[in-house]
Image (cartoon, rainbow, N blue to C red; front, side, top):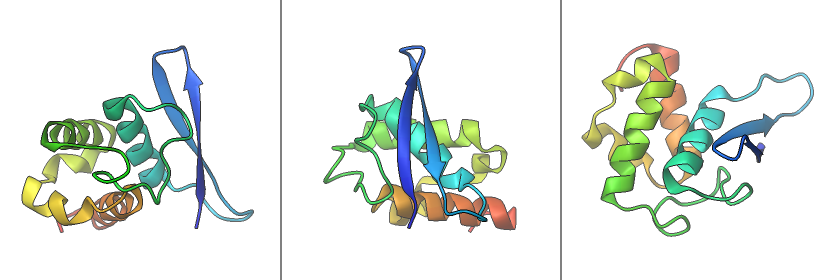
Length: 111
């Protein structure tokens, strides 16, 4: 499993850098989801990783979930097809949401 390291830039924008094993490609879906979670939740760097549970660990509520959905759709061109009923099962953790986004963008279709 990959570890995510968050870095604060310009005191306003937080970007995620995903560390990967040598010879593998960075996980852009995980980076995009971590970026969105950090921005919507206003979390400090280091509080968000793939294992973080959106509700239990990060305290997301329904308003924050809608903001997260909108932010992900802005970051990923094919994310515009995400519906709330499709998104709900993927909200167990940051990692499961990243897997959903990865599947959605790799197939080019709505799951």
